[in-house]
Image 1 (tube, rainbow, N blue to C red):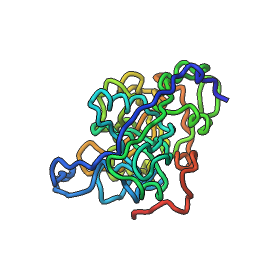
Image 2: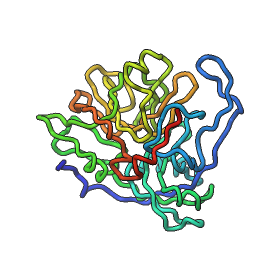
Image 3: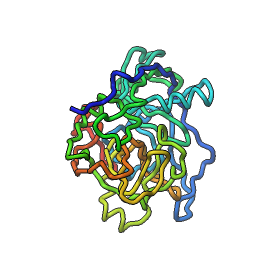
Image 4: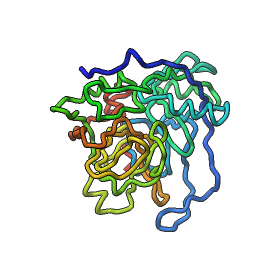
Length: 296
């Protein structure tokens, strides 16, 4: 069992509403200069959930499940995004789905959405504007035996369920993919990693094949080599960061499947180990493997 400071953490309610999809311009310009009209962020995405492919959709930055944002101003929405942690319980508190429960599965920067998975029958009852209460818990989480590993954006119960294994002064962490920091794009330069995400660029075909990036799924646990997220996102040789794939691939230059950080170690005290089942849809038992979609 991991020794964590769970008893010292504060559980706090935060409130958002199902957001409306947003479109600033009909066209998105792809990395090869082609104008495209595609669905993107926001709303209730009925046919894309964690566990489904992160690559191949006719979409750009599509968010799985339900996108949630506070209507009470920038500061309230910042609190919603920073305090919510992946694995937190989400409860519908208005509308026809009142009382139904889901789980936080990611955070998307720029648009500043918290992403929540609900079962399909619940999503059918939801409307844009319905209020979602999240029991935020996890900010301030520490691993007491691993001071050189920083933790963020994850509920302690989910971290226990992932069950990383000790190996000396390192933690062996299950991941589906190990990715070089050199292909990471949008999100670099952020001053913190307690909300939002940053993107895996997929524009180089050889890199896609070498790192098996076509098989990325929403909800995958992945490792990024030489990435230090202790105080923002930087390249640092020897560092290791663990994250979760939170939104789909993109056509815009510098963008791709988004990664929300959950652990980082400046000195590489995290040892990634490939496990094809390392996906939060499996770990949290959100759906059956047989129900996963294939968009190619």
